[in-house]
Length: 382
Image (cartoon, rainbow, N blue to C red; front, top):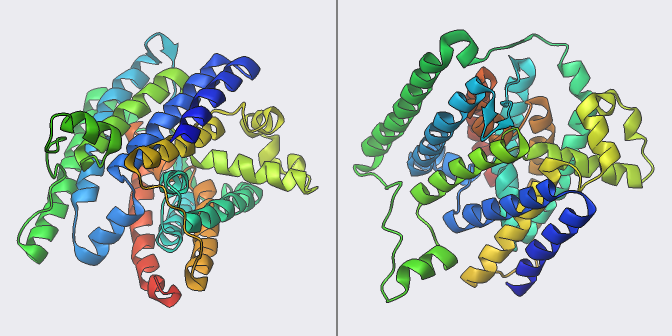
């Protein structure tokens, strides 16, 4: 716990002095995200697996709550073009073949790798050794995706922004209705299979004892609804502070490029890395790019949460099947995220909250990939 606290405080001070104070603030914001993700155990891979395999939908209903709150924050701010006086842009990307293929591969990969993009970061911070393998190969797969993305972009695609097509009120009404419909559908599936619903809010944020509420807040675990609300608000804070929504996967791409460059590979000459933003990111380094900085913060924040909860206990041994699944899953997630203009955070969460149709396509394609990934898990002893 002390180490995590030093990492967060020392990292923020170093970034503030060596880069700028905005990056320091984003690093701490990443730390808050990591703590929330860990305490609420808010993952996409496990909740989607439970929906497909067990017809338990509490996790997906929590995600719909998160998306509804984020949409209510994002769409008016994006229509205005500013939030708290800062110019902001949404996560709007092309809807097409590359998104469908990439999200499908990501869905397969997160069931083999054991986590999604954000889930990989917070479980690594929490001490999961297998997820370190997933993280390393996620970066490698994302780098490979950056090499081949120009070819994928030549396939059919179009950019559709729901607010641009329907207006602010129309887009907001449609998205809120879809969130409600999806939540309702998961409830019906669960009732038909089990006869009762697991709650998104499985209990108040209290435990027996005089200081129970504070203890639960600090040590966890948190109910899913608390995680959903906190993540929506923190994504809104990211939009206000960074000028764009929360993203995770580009940080992995940059990490892979930096590692490849250190090994002598001339990634700077690849077409993807000559485009304006990737070029600036590669030239600036790991601690000057927003997504990379926030990813480091998420790991540190999850480490702090695990220490507070007394659950930091890294595994010493990894079963061969688990290790192989982590390698393949990481590669598929990294490659898929680059093709799909983001992962479960950048494309699904931030994309849908921004009113981009590619986020909805990501959701459908990744659910299909989840089904395939579940069929493959037993082959690796998972």
